[in-house]
Length: 111
Length: 113
Image (cartoon, rainbow over all chains, first blue to last red):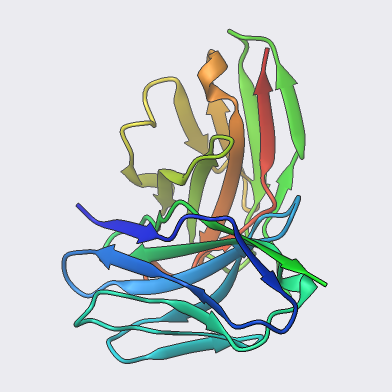
């Protein structure tokens, strides 16, 4: 069945460091891919999305490129801020109604 | 920006009692969902709802669970006889179409004693 695997956390970075959170997926067909972010005490917010191969989703300095050949959708940001501290979820939707989430990666950014 | 709102933010219930979690989806959305997240675990799909009926449900969504859209704005999840293992954060979501991103509420933390 469809699944999402993302790197285990927590990831701890200093402010202005480069961020990569790896995500790979298994899916039939042509899934849409998402990154959601969950700030402490809040719900899930859509961060970015990509709906077909080679699409790049971007928002708030974060980027992820839909790589069909490697079945990956890694999240990157060139310079993280303390305010980026949160849990990041990679997710996919493939021809059905449900969104399938990865386990989440907690990011801590130190000043 | 329109939001999905959920009430209450925290619900404490005795085991065996019925509980109803409430959600107000984004007003022009047609698809509605419930997910749950047991502490420290993945976000898991429970059920999707469209055109006043369940369109898909997971194996978690057994006979103890039901969903309803009692009026034009609310979408509820009922757990008939709660168990300790139902303790989790429950998220409601809605989307404009089945292939559009889902927008999530802030969740209801359900604690079963």
